[in-house]
Amino acid sequence: MINKERITNRFISYIKIDTQSDPSSNSTPSTLKQWDLAKKLAEELKEIGLQDVSIDEHAYVMATLPSNIPHQVPVIGFVAHFDTTPDFSGTNVNPQIIENYDGNDIVLNKEKDIILSPEYFEDLLQYKGQTIIITDGTTLLGADDKAGITEIVSAMEYLVDNPEIPHGTIRICFTPDEEIGRGAHKFDVEKFGAEWAYTMDGSQIGELEYENFNAAQAVITVEGKSVHPGYAKDKMVNSMYIAQDFINSLPRLETPEHTEGRQGFFHLSSIKGDVEETKLEYIIRDHDTTHFEARKEMMRDLVSEICSQYERECIKIEIKDQYRNMREKVEPVMHIVDLAQKAMEEVGVTPIIKPIRGGTDGAQLSFMGLPCPNIFAGGHNFHGKYEYVPVESMQKATEVIIKLAELTAKKYE
Ligand SMILES: [Zn+2]
Image (cartoon, rainbow, N blue to C red; front, side, top):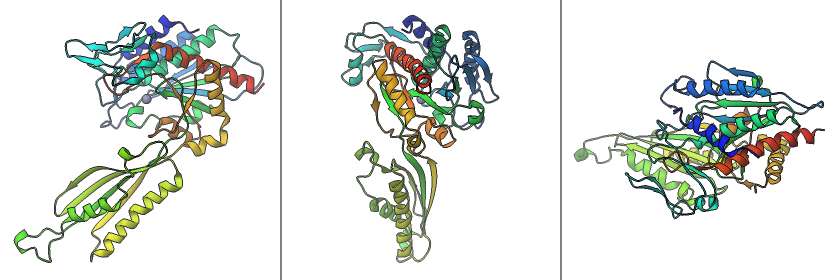
């Protein structure tokens, strides 16, 4: 069993270090403060006794736990990110620990009257009797994804201390800038040298994910003709009305607020316009690659149709692919999901397998040649002051990592 106090203290030592990333910066890491935790982690991994501990010029931390068995086993990896979201403050995180949670409202901040209530956050009730780490209501917690880091470090330490557990070579990597979509950008997959890996970056206990959206962004620019309204007859072209036609021609119910599960959507995220020019920004999402392509085609067709109604090219569309569904890269190696599922079951966790309605770093890594499903890290309510993590979930995630190492060794005996 993973020591509860030890894992709690380790987690708190990480969340005390501010590592917020910044999308407006072009460097990697995007903020200098991310180095503080990267360096601490590298030191800690050396102390634990891992090999080849490295930290590159972009702050990616890698290390190896060497194999302790005579037979050949595929090298597997575990990945987590140490930055926190730019959307909410991660400065001076002041965690509070609730032991033996009784199922009632939790006061995060008495002065500011900030309450974490199971009436609104029903998930809390499944952790009755457990130890929950919460914020003081002024910052996020940072369980996303310092819980993942805590679990990987704790699992490596456990495997070093318990050499009777058989395992092949394990590689681990901690990345910067995941929250601004760049966690995989400078990831050296070749140097990492694993056959497959798992991101420890999911939410509630049991989550196991290997499907995510295909994603694209579309910008539609409508050109009008501005004329004095008093003399506009048969001359003015109001770009906003043309834009409105475009908007109304898309299926009204295929939007984020009307879809779930594997249903895709068009999401109008911004309109900016006047008579002369209107710009529409959309994101397009679909798990199914064929449907995804059809959505893009539908938008393009609509643009040509509207164009043909006017004498000139009054409307243009630019579509940019963002990321793809990792399923096509994971399905050919489905045993890596099966292993994770089995590892969870063997440590008493019920797997919750569902498609992600978003993207993960693992999706990018999968297309870079490192198939990479996502496993729960245990936290809830990411990116805000209501973020919390049950210590028991971190203990279980750590056990899942240990079990995965062991099951992989046994599978290739
Ligand atoms: Zn995350």
